Image (cartoon, rainbow, N blue to C red):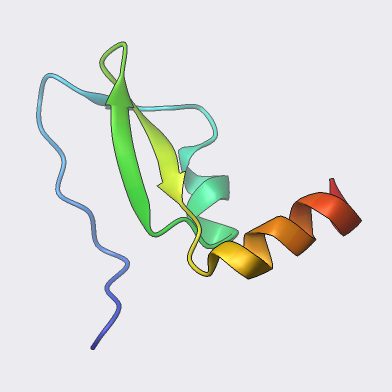
Length: 56
């Protein structure tokens, strides 16, 4: 499986002010809320858990 950092964007939905930073920090999937892309997935759920415990 290959991972692509390219996301498809529509004209009705905009990037959040934090979009580029979330991509740099590993966001791999996005949802739409209030006409804005928000990060939905940062990869490995177990690693996400430990990142929240140790780094947040």
